[in-house]
Length: 250
Image 1 (cartoon, helix red, strand yellow):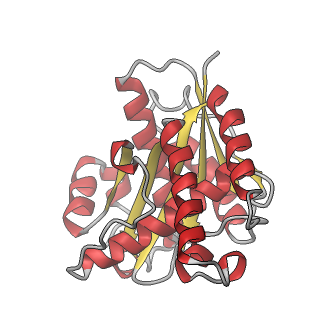
Image 2 (cartoon, rainbow, N blue to C red):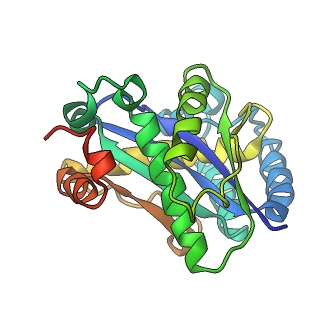
């Protein structure tokens, strides 16, 4: 049976101005090669013990003291690995205050936090896309086992499967998997996607466009599945799904 693996991490979910859940998807047989090449890239001189987008952006932690040339070369290599393996991006993003305004006073505790909405968004969007391309296998979601994220995902998953449309349920694995981003390279790449996309979205909503970094490699050819929600899109969702609309307040 075909298996699609989706590695997901968050960036500041529940924190203003924007909550982001994002990662990378690819057939299961793509990931072993990706893991090896990413690990090899970390082991180059100067060596990285791990990759975190926040440290790369601020040139701190593992990137502290690096020259511009060393930094650009390593980032170029990492982005090239993503592009060469033809991963496709997945993202769900929503302004945090908007979510709180619409869902924050909900008596349902799980719905008060953005995780359920965003996971449901990712799963639904993946299922629709895979149906369009004729994928007949299963989709396994793998999340970082960090404190907070694991609890939020676990609490949301059963509800997600219960509420999923009939065409979605056969595709999605019955439970999510949690792994450490210290040892799973794909989760480091998911952290990269989530953090980088959040910075782009914040800049865009503030009327600015961040110029492409000098280390971007082939990223313009990468397909990304997802959206930034706004009030108009939420109202469209409410109109299309009355059961979900019952939990929303405008």
